[in-house]
Length: 89
Image (cartoon, rainbow, N blue to C red):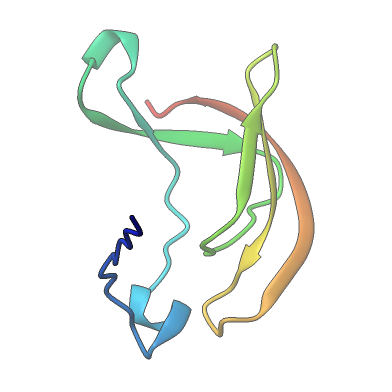
């Protein structure tokens, strides 16, 4: 007996351009003081600027590593930033 499965997927002809505009805001979700909500953060260091589809990770001492992504013109970025992150006042 042979079976086949077909999965329907939605596609966009706009690609990454269909995602809208990027912003440079730095936000944290689910902070201990306000679980289940967003709050703005500030970061020391050079601003990476607006981007999407980037890689990010935190370090044990609370810094944020951010690498690459796409800029507002859909151009690939190969830069890296190390940000000292803390809650906005």
